[in-house]
Image (cartoon, helix red, strand yellow):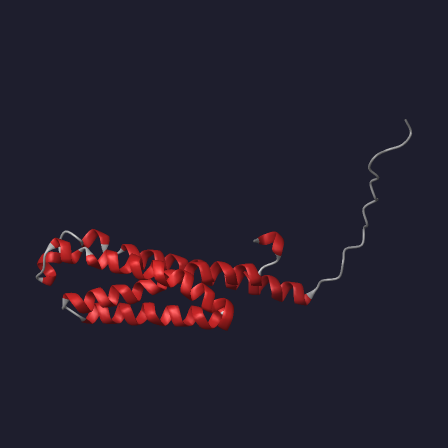
Length: 152
């Protein structure tokens, strides 16, 4: 009866020295998480902002409702194509590089969409914005690489 399954070590009154590299790593982790969270939020907003406009788009673009619905379809279709493609390329050529490529496609699509009034150009712009959907899984992969295992 005198044997215990667990032994409790006495607490040390000496605290470990302050590790500057751990502090820098912690602040870097915070910056990575904040940046990727902001990116994910922007991508989500970018993809859903057109939905409330769908009833008005046929009149604004001088087209039918069926044609205007291609604005959503093109975004989702190119997102579905780009997510596995860009994530694979990110594994091959670097996550940061492919994240910048996807971000550039999304920004160029946004600028093109803002400047065009022709339906085919707006659909093309929304397709380019759909490539931005791949930012979310690439961002998750970056967090997996950058953060300690217990925080992911």
